[in-house]
Image (cartoon, rainbow, N blue to C red; front, side, top):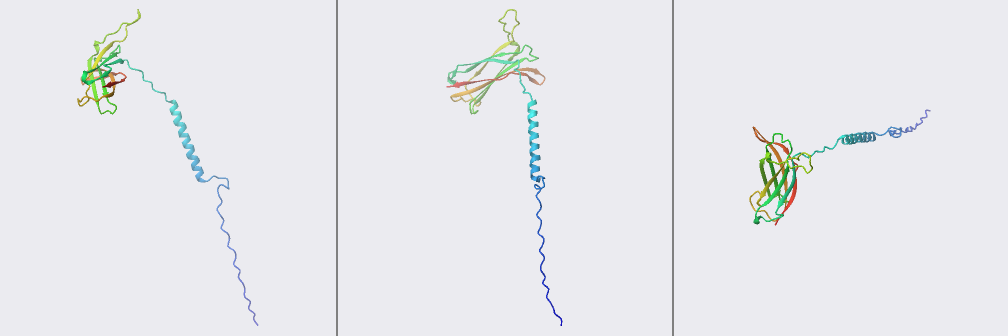
Amino acid sequence: MITMSSTRHVPMPLPRPQRPRSTTSQGAPPAGWLAATTLGSLLLCLLVSVDTADAKRKPVQRSQPDLRILSITASPEFYTPQAGSLDFAIEIELPKDLDGATILEVSSLISSPSRRSMRFLSNRQPAGTASAPASSHAGQPEGKPRIAVKLTWDGTDQTRQVVENGKYSYEVRAKLLAVGEKGPRTKMVSWPKRGIIEVR
């Protein structure tokens, strides 16, 4: 007699998948942290190099040229175009050595605050007509030569229309010119002087 016995198969448990270990648990920093640290170091080095370069730069101080505008007097103080013209009396100090310059050009730009009304005035005259003022101290050499220039404004703008009432700014410049084969050439330019005039 054959006796058959059934065998029961018990399923084997599957192995659990192992989670990847974090690099931080092993002591190594993550890749993002490394990238941020590297970028920060580069930026710090760049800032330090820029600061060092700025510290090495020395401010450039421009000395005033020998051609100078000493004074500007506008008359009348309060200007009315219908009453006549406005005169600028300008005193210029020239350098002792003109370096070949023969012409003195003095110009002025008069403009309204909005820049809608503007007028350019200019005067040219020989630079050799300047006179050297005597020194106030005996035995001292004479001062630099000076010259008086007059600019006249008739109260009109660039379109030859009479300007409106209000305050107008002016800027005066002086130039020394030397005449060459191709015409006048600028040799020296003064620092500008600015002021305000009132039109009533």
